[in-house]
Length: 526
Image (cartoon, rainbow, N blue to C red):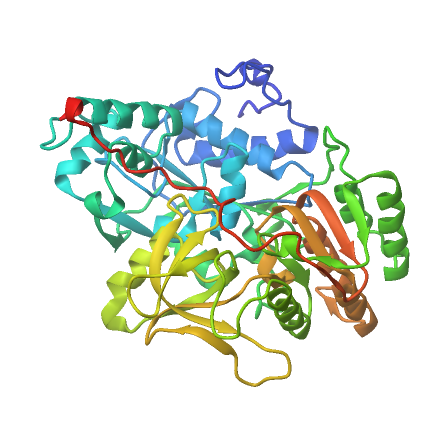
């Protein structure tokens, strides 16, 4: 019999050095899920209670799913499971560096389908990376890999030609604070091109994969993950929109009932979020669209975190796209945004948001594709245009949510125009990364992302309600509204009219996080 979370005294009121406060106590449904997952790990040779590991035994892998709506505590459970696995001696694989494999090593990776989803987890204290970053591993320069080995406790402090003791100390200090090998090497004065020489497809499997936003997984991604992880735990929201082409079905819908752990209790947040209240009201089968809009208006009257807005705020669109259902609405809003900011008809302004629409590279450039994808430039990645690159057709970009956000890449930028067959193309390299404008995005593409402030275009949700369409037996407008409003972390703007407010200031890039600068060594450090 496995001793579960509720029965283990050490999990109650545990103090951490970082927070110096008790760990949250799990609710009954979370504790039941914990017990089932603990049993799954135990059968795979990982004992969360005794905090012991042993080599995995023979047998077939296991897939489990933790399913719950927004506010049900999926992220809390994910964080607690991650922490317990590390305390049991399981190595956390981040995707940026893996040291020498030990025979007795057990490993876990926390993954999300997109940069933004991984970034959201990291902001909540969960060390997540993207699925692409775990499929492809970096190849380090042997000289600088000695620094990584030292930082991770697998080697002695190295002596590196051209690098001072001060630089190594700074690498040590950075790693102890953030546990990032690339960040530590950057603090020592190195660039990524200095120490990462390429990327390779992962050959060795890992042990445990914890996958957030599993509702976004398609069948191909799911099968790729199953090849890597004998134990795969999916965390997903059944109320979200299924991937396009899967007929409203998500990968965890096909699992057996015993593999699906349901979190039914919705936990009230400390701030008693009106946004979550609106999201969960959508589960009422008798609620129609008019009734839901009345609820939004009533919430806006008593709480400033919900705004009943008669126009779109153009200032917010630069970093937080308007969420829409129809593609035609998206195109019109993008055109209105560019007009409002005075964007020229033949160029992009620094600060304009873009969405990666894929990499248009031939097979002979496979290495370049792997490099870009491993850095986070994958389909759906959100970027901000910084300006033209040094070469014709290149753009300097800032990738939202990426650990190394700045890059210059050959770009094919396509900006669709209202009632026009052909898009406006300010950048047209022969090959490279393709981008669409990101001032407005469809709700489907917004899944996995969150922003402090979110604008939802109500007229589109109304159109979906009038269409009487359903997805997996649920009214489409309710799924759209649920996904859209749960993208908001702080404030929800419910837009009621097709109007755009004038910008309060020109577009710019000063608000974007600047990556860690290279260390300039002075004469006294030489």
